[in-house]
Length: 158
Image (cartoon, rainbow, N blue to C red; front, side, top):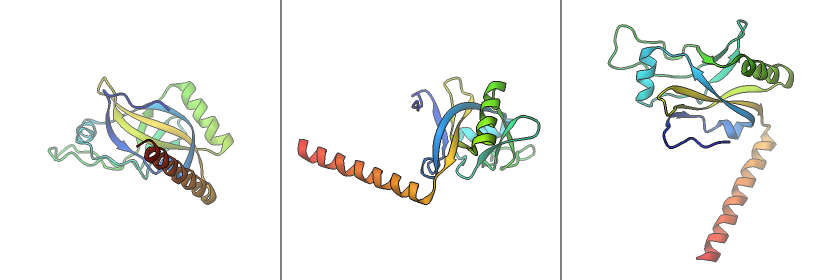
């Protein structure tokens, strides 16, 4: 997976996604936002930990249950905090994601929300398969083992 470039600003990160899911594939999607949502995102208080993406009947993919707080300075024309937001993807990307969701039983999980170098809000979307409890334990064991190896190597070199 490619790291975020230095010129991008991270808005929200779904840290539990890699613990709860095997991420098979990732892609970048634009988000259709209203003006007060963009202003609220620039304050950096969004949360995508409990959100997911869903393929709807109209053939578009929507981000559901993502929390973008209301913009404090706007009183009259503010947005709903947990409304469905359309994701901007090409047709072939939507077809590939829908194939993975329908045939292989995968889920669309938002991994990161950030502003790219042009200042546009983007969402890193992962095509994921859920982990079972024993898979999570194996992941934890592997992570602990890697930490112990790094400690031993660091002590041996120092």
